[in-house]
Length: 278
Image (cartoon, rainbow, N blue to C red; front, side, top):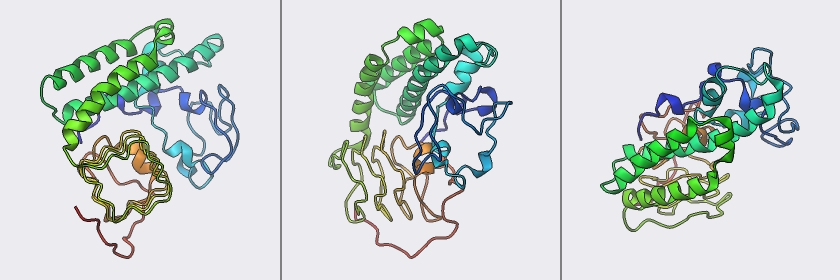
């Protein structure tokens, strides 16, 4: 896994707290209260900072800790709107929030494309991925009107064809196909997942203790509450920080050099588990 480019990492100090205002969320295990779209969170301070940032999990806002805008927040705040906030220009607030949603999709695609290029697929696919990166970058620099007119779904579909081809090449032959599989709470410790296609799989609460996920593609996989204690993620494909933040792990969980261990993970390893066979 490559080092994430700076423009694809969230920089909250250069953003107008768009993720705290634009989206809606409902009271649940992830959010302690209801908030309609376009309304600032009750904990948002006047300086665009979260008033309970260091206590989000303890206060019932685990969903905030796993959200990743992939740098779209600062792009909208500082580039698309030139440093003018939704508080400065309330008449443009709704447009800014809609623009943020589009930019977030584009930046997420950029992250996957950049990661795919770094993983080193052969030509001509590598060149096609680079051209997709350039095209997506051009979209991110567009005006608000141009962004809102963009058919994001069509662009995503085109990009996903390339990413799927890259996944096939990088995973190799013989991996299990679990695309979009509903694996909520399933014990996968004895399932061979080396080179598996887990794109879009729902792994909420799944038991992956000790599992080798080498070359497994986890694009869009939902890892909320998944137990990754002792799992080998060093060469997992398209694994990003938000997925780790949503999961459980410990000191035995092996991570790529580019990703750090989430602070809320267990400080000490628990009882050793049987590793899945290759």
